[in-house]
Length: 122
Image 1 (cartoon, rainbow, N blue to C red):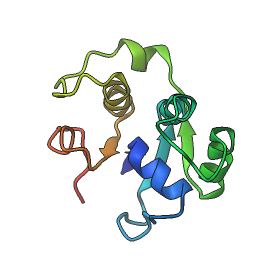
Image 2 (image 1 turned 90 degrees about the vertical axis):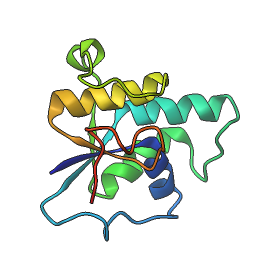
Image 3 (image 1 turned 120 degrees about the vertical axis):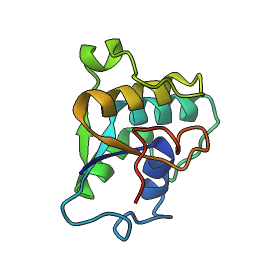
């Protein structure tokens, strides 16, 4: 299964506070989105997020961990979600749109997203 990580997990992985290895199967493929990178960069610039690394270093760390990065394209931006989440967060909506378009599931612990049909359930 193709799994897209929510930003929370990307931050935890970069900070080495979490390993996703025990949660996924060998056949699962992990992805991080440019949406995650954008959210991290914005929160860092606003002083809402302090990382042990520069945001510009996050892509290399993610890829070094064997996780693929998916870009944002027009299909993701223009997708109308089959089920609109109860959150108004544009990052959440774009991550879910990527999941819908690309046939992925979103790995999240966000209370507003865990019951969404596109959320991953181990």
